[in-house]
Length: 177
Image 1 (cartoon, rainbow, N blue to C red):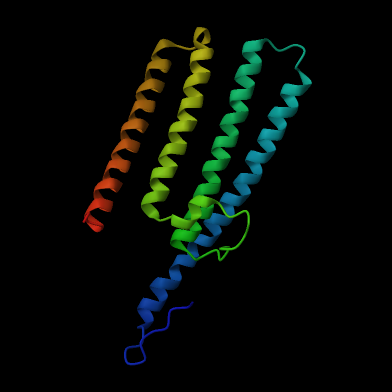
Image 2 (image 1 turned 135 degrees about the vertical axis):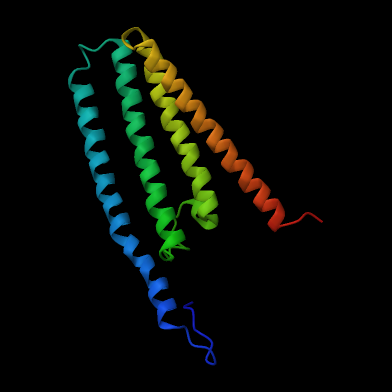
């Protein structure tokens, strides 16, 4: 259903230009799709490398390689959320309502939901990096490990703040009866 301006009050030209400017984000989202391809290549190359050297890798090296693969998957998921959710929220509807593969979260995506989901994805990625650090602690500088923990905690506090703000805004916009 397209927006139709009121017949007695047409949309001014400046309003039309400003509204149409959302399409300037299209090349950005297309670029993120290209980056998805880069991460797919990176994943396959890392998987091939791990499988090729499987007999010479220690259990710890295999665990670190698997965590690296999971990290690539998490970043790819983050890219997908930004691409699909951002396009749907800020540019145009995707019109895939009856598609069997439509992500469940896309039904109720908005800027706030997208921020909370992205912050949770970033925390997950940070957690994978932190786990890699602790597994490989003997080769890491203590200061590096401390900074990684501090940064991870900052991500946690930021995500909790976003979620709490969303809860406050939601409760104000929809008062309880």
